[in-house]
Image (tube, rainbow, N blue to C red; front, side, top):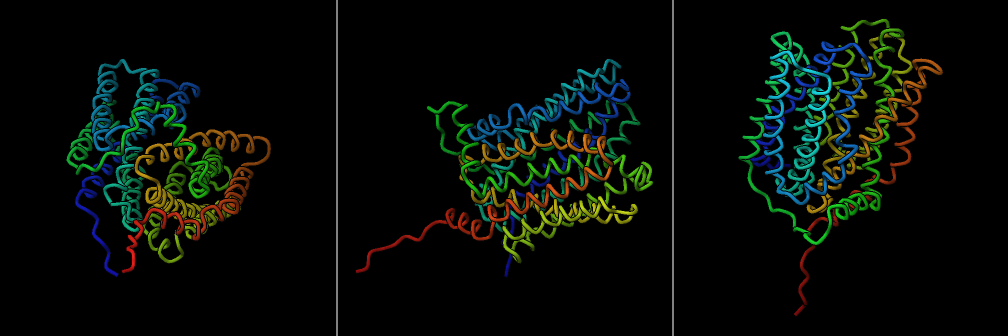
Length: 416
């Protein structure tokens, strides 16, 4: 079977998002380090971290409704241009030694708000660019996911730490440059048809319509529940993972970094084989299998007797997550109508973001009340239970029916 080539425009979009992800990785490492240089108060540091999650919690659905009203390509490049200018403010403050925790928290909030609009617009733009072809969407998302993991997960954080050694403003300026380059690349992308406007409908009514569309469709609801429940489980693990690695596995800072690298490496592998799994098993069955793999891998991590087994478990879990994060969004992009794509994508993302704090609280409480392994066992049980519940919601039969509904129906002519 000959694979259809991805359009030239996708290459520019991939480059733009890769450059921007590298800058995100730089800032992801630099912001906490800049905060630590200003204060050792844990609550002040938590404010900077929490500020980066608030936009999705506060404006997720409304942001999707706005994206469905606006031109998606213009939304992306304007957002990146604004973020490039925004970063000049904390960079200048760092250079003149007037940087503060409130300024860092405000920067984290506004960067995340820009990310809400850019990510939602990019998610809505891609299906139109690729003509809603499921196979092309899987290949495109696999490449985007792989590049994001490699840049923001591998290259970005070490680069951010290294640039910070050159000066407090340097990593912030580097991220500003990445946003500016991304804006220029996105501006050169081909235009796609703009969804039909609904001028008489209020923004709030449009937002409710997008959320309702997700909750009334069992397939879309199943696709949304996986990352939402998964975030509860994974945040429960992440909350105690560093302490678990130190006290139960006997590894230091370097060993902990290697464990995270193993997970990221698995994520790259999973993203790379996602399309193969979808073709071989069917998208619905593949999603059930990858979710099962994630749950079993966390179970293996909980029972790991040493760091080597833990690293293998994290790599396997990362592979499952990487494949899931290609297959799920690709299917959603293929079946959701263009005029609802922004709202559906942002609703799903908001559910996942809202679930994350519960996971962090759950992990901390279980570790305090019982043992460091308890949150891991609880997370594994939660993932496996979620897999059982959503298996029929995202079955191959339901997936194929949804895809058939989106395909053009043949025109019937009367017999002569």
